[in-house]
Amino acid sequence: MTTGGDDRLERMLQLLRARGGRVTNARRAVLGALLDHREHASAEALAEMVHDSHPDVHLSTVYRTLDAFEQLGVVTHVHLGHGRAVYHLTDEIHHHAVCERCGAVLQLPLTLFAPLHRRLVDEFGFEVDAHHFAIAGRCAPCRSELRAQLSADPPAAGHGNVTIENVP
Ligand SMILES: [Zn+2]
Ligand SMILES: [Zn+2]
Ligand SMILES: [Zn+2]
Image 1: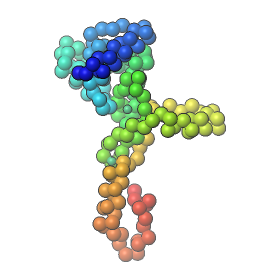
Image 2: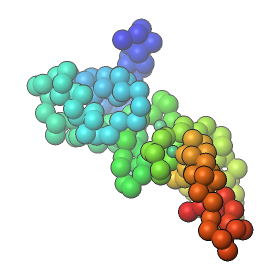
Image 3: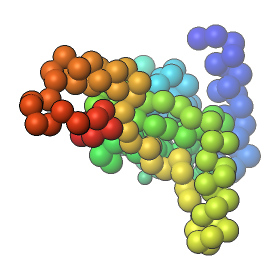
């Protein structure tokens, strides 16, 4: 791993200690897996990674460690589709958009939702937790594929006024 990764691991260990969490070998291994897994990792994927590098660490320990990390504010989870939760270190938070067609995940800046946050609080008194769930939709490549399909397969006579916005 790069020195940057080691620095980040040290920072996360410091955060863990600052929040009153113990640093055990299992916890180090789970943090290491979270850092190595550059994409959005499910609990199952993290447990597998930890088990590969540290066969002595039980799968159930990995799940318990993730729960403990969440309570200590070291990790957070986000649901990317139908309830599928993936884990994140809390030093790098962003919003997510997930393509319902191909599963691609876009990372969106937090600032994007600031105006919506403010309006929900001001007008409804509701504070939204916008990074708990991903916004679902269709990614750019899928949209152009769908558009291409539509033009290759013109609507039957009598339905000539179907527009791209009506594609389900
Ligand atoms: Zn993310
Ligand atoms: Zn897509
Ligand atoms: Zn959740």
